[in-house]
Length: 416
Ligand code: NAD
Image 1 (cartoon, rainbow, N blue to C red):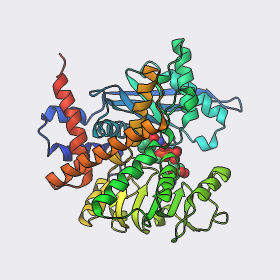
Image 2: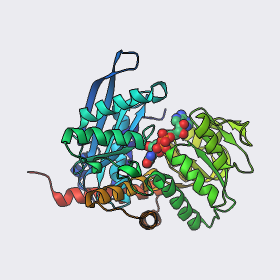
Image 3: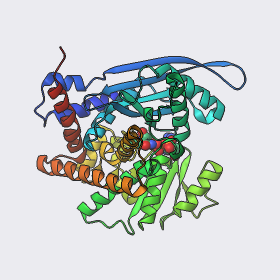
Image 4: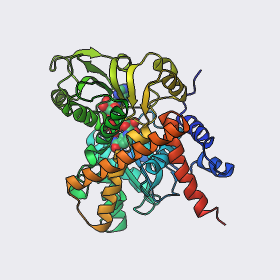
């Protein structure tokens, strides 16, 4: 039986990369662990007057290349091992796109869909207060992830600023533009997914125009990626959310489908020209690009043998298990791995942090231009390693990411 423990999977991936790197064994062991794990149990006053206790995490994997960076997830399945894995992946991701950050991640075990906005705000503010001694613009900078958004980032920024006694916009990224957010940050991850998919298509001699695309997840990553594919003339044949999805072999009207989801909080087949499809079925659709953009461990080895796509572009973090990776490789399905495909978000988060620190405002064009260059360079460097070492793109991205972090650790040395 395949292990679906994200942290074990993340550690296994480091071991694989280690086989291709000349790295001290002790350093590799160090990189297979996290640096700091903060667990907080905290009370929140709910709307009915009762006090509920929530559990939250903030984990730093490695600050070797710069301040730790990573999102905060609100989901009932959040646990320490998941946050550890996500923090580790952030270290490799920031290294793959070569921005001067380390890796971190956080989360609160909760079901925001069953909470009022006020309860989510109270929970966010108290969680921020609990982790405030450990975050900061020079040490660890949160951002949005699953079921957190620019509004949640505003509350984090406000609570942290109240504690400091002055405004500290640079403590968090993914803020609304009005609070020091960057142009292009909201679109950045989905756009980066599209940019790397287009680079992969160019490499394989595949045209985006008319290509079939299936996207699991319709949030910040999946929804935005769908819009970019649609605007480039691709046929987005399916898109889903946690309840299931829409399917039309001729291509969905993506702006209409997303407007429906926005208005009714779900997809309604009767409002758009589409059939209903389950998340399971979506993954098996015949398509050119399969873009998992929801949660982890969606493509297991068993599922991988049923995929009918030319390439998988991972909008989500950790959607494919290592056993599934081997199946994809055997089957010749091209892969744009998560630490490359979805690195656009952290890249523009870096731009946001730089602008905040310097009190500058970059134009949308400036952000777009820099993002395009960084994503294309990271894709080219990963592809080059993949061809040189004759390894799958995941291993190539790990060789690049782990290699850069290991180099930083070795240059800094072990204290004392
Ligand atoms: P989001 O909260 O905006 O959207 C999540 C989407 O996933 C929603 O459409 C939701 O309905 C769907 N979903 C939830 N459970 C599902 C299930 N069981 N099956 C199918 N769909 C389900 O979150 P997001 O920011 O778009 O994040 C999605 C993925 O992308 C996560 O893996 C996240 O770690 C990763 N990611 C996000 C960013 C970012 O900047 N937001 C950056 C890098 C990676």
